[in-house]
Figure 1 (spheres, rainbow, N blue to C red):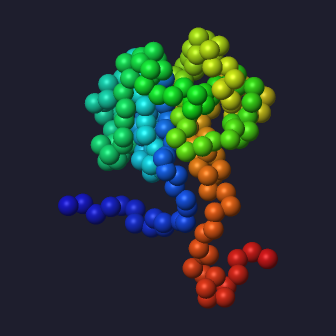
Figure 2: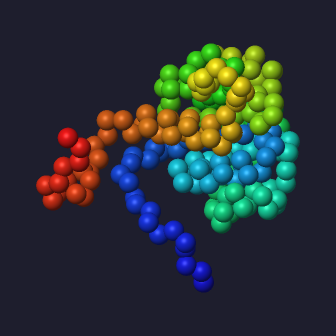
Length: 187
């Protein structure tokens, strides 16, 4: 039995929503991105929808390497195509993210059970999806310049944690353990 390499994890106080959020990847192409997002999902109690066709096989080592030994525990729901995804989930609860989104991701009021939908790494969301669900599309601000888009896993992390942050707002948390000893943090 191997000992875990990292043992400094603190369980920070946080209100985890019930139900949790879902992330949907439409035709993802790069296994390490999907592996990283799977790890993010497991760490936050988020289900992962993979909408085909996928640009890789789920048995690929790059996917498992990015997800570390967590991949086997990720709750993955596979859909053969977008039409099947539309039939399986309440589309009114979907938020779509695109570099062409005219609304910022942090201007959305997220609710537990919402589905955060991302397109493929090279093409983003299909034009049909962008047209059909135009009012539900948002983006992440970027400075003008040569960068066309953020990494898929980075985008998913930014948006998922904003959704989680909104659900955690105003909830009482136990004070940091140091507070009970009369130590103050900050001035």
